[in-house]
Image: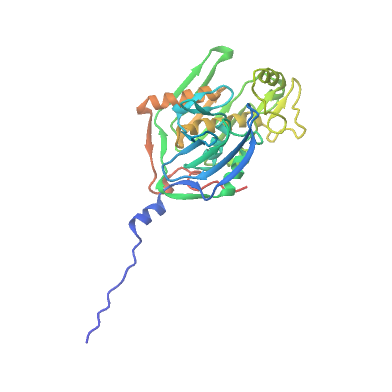
Length: 328
């Protein structure tokens, strides 16, 4: 009797191998909650962040209404940009979404449900650091679906005003994600700090370099806003506040250039409202929520200015996108 032995190979399942190599979408491992106050409304609000299925995107859900209403993020969902970014579905709104959206952009989260019990996201400490902590505490996991990017193919720019009132924002092709911002407030305290900053996701750390930068304001403006029913929840525990001569917060600034870094933090949140991560270089001078949203709409209106791409091998993706940001 002759015994023939054939070589045996154990082959990886093709689809599984494909997913292992592919740059995948991400969501939370578990839900996490926070309670805080709206910066402008002064209302108490509960926030619950929940995992979502692939291709869901980031969806805000007003659970305080008799019938909950979903508001998926998109550039077109932005309906108000006065002092913050507001998204809407019909008459139902959620204000001040930019800090949470910035944290999602910095950590590379694609799919998330945001259950909210009022019409404004809580301000927490005035930066995105608390949202980063919440998201990382819940854990971030990959999903078996390709991560889709909006890759900018040619420059797109929007401008507003002239001379001393000039503002502009621009997107240009870049194999990665880079933001540079310049401010000009003509205020002695702000002018004594860094006026320009740049952040590149491939070489910097969002958690370390950007996330802790707080929103800021001036006492004279706060008084006017409160008389108009705004900034009712603002204070020294959730914003950098200045009079004409100094920072009033006893602990001072968290970064030497905290003011301009907060503008980068805001821009990352505003731009992530496009619904997908950008592959682009963003630069801006005195831009804000309104101009950032105009820039997204201008990009989407010019169909030859961008394309949607995925990376079947995450090694081909720009540095900074392949792995979730490390914990604190």
